[in-house]
Picture 1 (cartoon, rainbow, N blue to C red):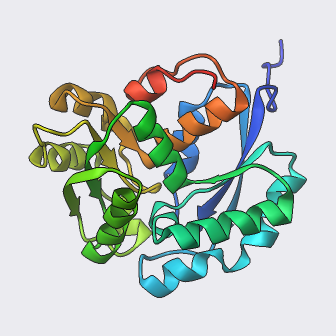
Picture 2 (cartoon, one colour):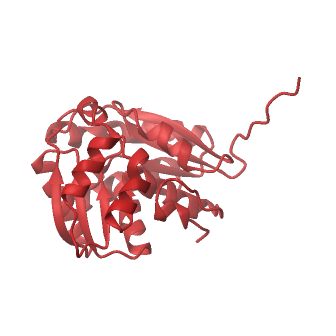
Length: 245
């Protein structure tokens, strides 16, 4: 019997810093990335979206990032949308700390989303999330600061990661179609711990516009940084057109 062929990252290794409650990012990123790109994950404590919890997530970011560096990763991702879009100042501080601790290239979910939207290109966006109004409004302000026109901004008022994970893909489809906007260039389904991957293609057909999620943006960004050439079908226009920088 022939043993299965395994690839341990011949195409590159991505280190991901996740909220501790996150159940969606690992399986989604694995499905979205080529088989020759490996993922290593470390978690930081975050179980809800209160302001205190969000601001506290990065408290131990240096030792967590160092653990990923031990695994020989090529890039470190701070993968929490609500924290990285809290403010450009917080985003910059977290990334500077990761870079200082590891000497590695790093990116936040927020930056990957901005880069993905710019690449489409999309300037007028509808922002949809599982978050409370306070979190959603901070995120909308972040995107506006980066030059995007926010045509719609709606959340599902979830406060914990488990509530966010409980939302079915069909519910996301219904939520997004209710917020369709004729002038939108793209739709952003924000948050790393939501089950949106399963409905991206159906939503793009319904809305007639690209749909970008936090996880597709990070997969796309890292593929480009690692020089991955093939597009990935099944998760929307962004990944289908993924290519080298």
